[in-house]
Image (tube, one colour):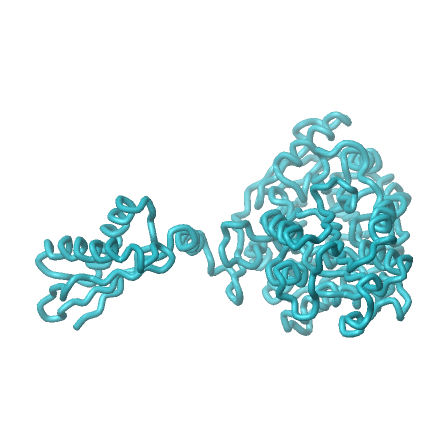
Length: 550
């Protein structure tokens, strides 16, 4: 007997990596395929992506991938997923532009990208009929989905808030959403990230005046940074530059490309003479230029990062220049990077306005408690599934639903891989799909696991000690004392005696064996030196034995 299955493959406990599956019989659709960002201890890891194993194993059922909006944590994993399943992708016009650009970056061609209009289009994907409707978020052209299934209508509303004065002039289509809900709502799957924040999330509109107050009478260089997909914030920055009589310059590849895409599609509006090149900007007085620069998350190597450490090829930060951060360091692992960047800018005597100063230079794109309550009141669902937050956000969301009349058992707080099965207007937790975080490291996908990370952590903390051992192949005996080489463990010039003594002690240990077997020698070397160095220094370097047979 067929039933509707919802699977949270990721995106319920870590804010990012949003990736969800709806399955009925021989039909399956995916909503979103986002990346996560590495924690500080994930040395060398570039991205974290969802585990696509289940989708890949069932790709014969897959009827399409729906993308809700243009943030990386909802679409950034598509270049890794599409080569494994090669299916149709559906998105609004701006989001499709971002996806096309991303696929070009990965040199992927031939994938089927379909643009839908949330004002009029309905999508039929196997057993699923999907009606998109416009929502407000910090990036334009975001949508929610009313998904009709044989078991009832499910509303999937990813990142949203009720903003009646959005920068793009397109608020949450509350009329369409309410009309869709009149036929009854089986379940709502929706954003819970703001469930601990009281009130309504503020409108984006009020930010422009705050930026304007900082810039209008300022007499030096201005650097404004926000995330590259925040087209609305970019529009506000351009409006302020126009009012201040400054020329705007986009700095950083990501922000230049996103601005170009948004303008070509009609989502970013400015006079052609307002934006100039960095080459043209260098000919103007400093109080006539407004730089919109990438790097608001403190990414090493970004334009703002290079400016802060004095290594940008074309820009130089001068004392009393103005730097405005219009974003929060929300992704995991980004706070330390942004704090470092802010400190470097302050050290250079710039005037820095950033997240800790409570100046309302950024508002969340996620609905707060009153927004969530309004969505619940609009939809009146029978069942609730929180997504896009952490355990504490899911629990707060659950408590809000219960205050509005839901039973505790009608709210499903899901861990990655957990499922909900809907049948005959009832719902229950189903089995769990095995999932894990998949780490992307350079060109490698999934080949960095816990063992590799642990090794990298040891190397970063305690360094490495390389033991060079020469063995007489015929006599099976050690030739002389091993030479110990330090890299990141102890300073050889100062602590050479420890390394020499360690070599002698290791030689004595190995000489107790009647003969030297290469495999056994390696194991003894690792175990003995790890103990020896910890006893002498309190540190445990990675020990790498190199056995040379003579």
